[in-house]
Image 1 (cartoon, rainbow, N blue to C red):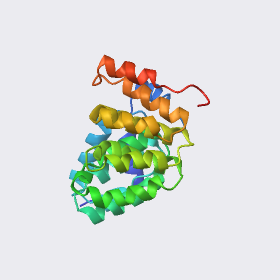
Image 2 (image 1 turned 180 degrees about the vertical axis):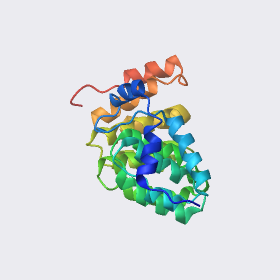
Image 3 (image 1 turned 90 degrees about the vertical axis):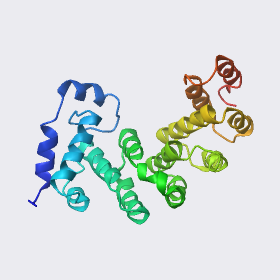
Image 4 (image 1 turned 60 degrees about the vertical axis):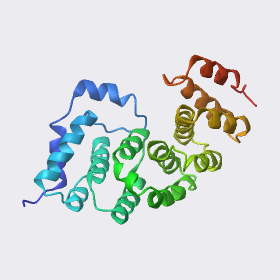
Length: 237
C-alpha cells in the first residue's frame, strides 16, 4: 500500500471543485471562509475511493486529511461514518470529530453519516447527553441533530422533550437544532408533542421556530397546521 500525504488528499479535493457551486454554497454556510466548492455526493464518492485505495485504513486517512477547508472536515466525517468497527470505536471517533465542528453544515453532514448509531443507540446516547449539557453551540446542536436522526421514537420521546428544555439554547444554531428536532417530533408524535409544547419551558424564539418548521412539513394536515399557528407566542411571552 502506497503512502499518502495531506497535500495529496487536498489536491484530490481541489480537482473536484465546482466554482458555481462554491459561490452558491458559500452563502449557505456562514463562518466557513474556506470552501472549495464540491457537492456532497461527490465528496462521498471520493471518500469511498480513498477507502478502497488505502484498504479501509481510516486512521491513515484521518491523520492525513486537513481541516483548513470545509470539504476536508466533511470528508473526515464521512470517512468516520463509513467505518464499521463497533460501538467502542464509534464513540472514539465521535469524540475525535465533534471538536472540529464549526458550522451547521459540517455538523449535520456528520450526523447523517453516523448510521452505525442505529446499532448502538444507548451507548451513543450517553455521549450525546454530555454534548447537550456542555453549553457549547455546536456540541449542543450535534447532540440534538443526532436525536432527530436516530432517536425520535417511543423509547426516547420523553427524554427528547427533557433535553429540548434542559439544553442551553442561547446560541442560534443550537436553538435551530432544537426547533428542528421538535418539528420532527410533531410529524411522528403530533398529539404528544402538542401536549409537551403547551407547558414547555422554551424561549420564545425556539418555541416559535419549532412551530414554524412543523407547519412547513408536508406530513401535517392543514388542520394541524392551523392549530399550531394559533398557539404561536407573541414577542416577550
